[in-house]
Picture 1: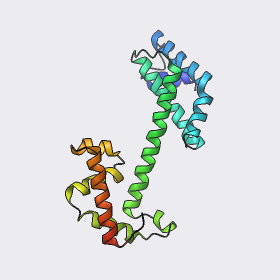
Picture 2: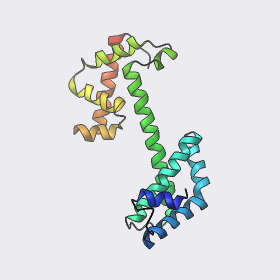
Picture 3: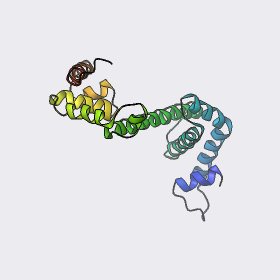
Length: 185
C-alpha cells in the first residue's frame, strides 16, 4: 500500500471513492517529505537512541502527524523542519514511555533487579518506607520517579517552585538512605 493510500485511509476517506483534491495534495506533500527526508529522519531517530525498528515506527508516526496537521489546514512554512522537530518529540516521548515502564517494573519488583543483584524485597522495602514520608515528599517522589516528571512539572502540579520540589526530593532521599542504611547514591 502506498503512503498516499495509507494516509488517505488514516484520514477516514473511503477507499472506493475518489480522494478530495485537498487530501491528495496533502498526501503528495507528505510523500515528498518521505521521499526527500525519510532516510535522514530515520538516521536522526537512530542517533536519538532508538533501535532501527523503533526509529522506523517513529518516522511513520512523524509522517502521519505531518499529514494530519496539513490536513487540518495548519500552515507549515517549512515542512522539513517541522517533520524533524516532530520526529524529535516522538523519539523523546518514546524514551519517556520506556523510562516510565522501567520505573513501573522497578516499583513492582520485577526480575530486572535480580539481574543487577538487587532483590525485589529491597525495592519493596524502599517503596514501603516512601509510604511513611510526609505527604509532600511522598508526592514529589511519586511524580518525579513514577510519573517521570521534571522538577518544573512537579512544582507546577503541586503548586510549589521547582526549587522546593528539588528540596523535598533531596530530603526524602536522605531520609530513605538513613532509614534503609544505604549511604551510597
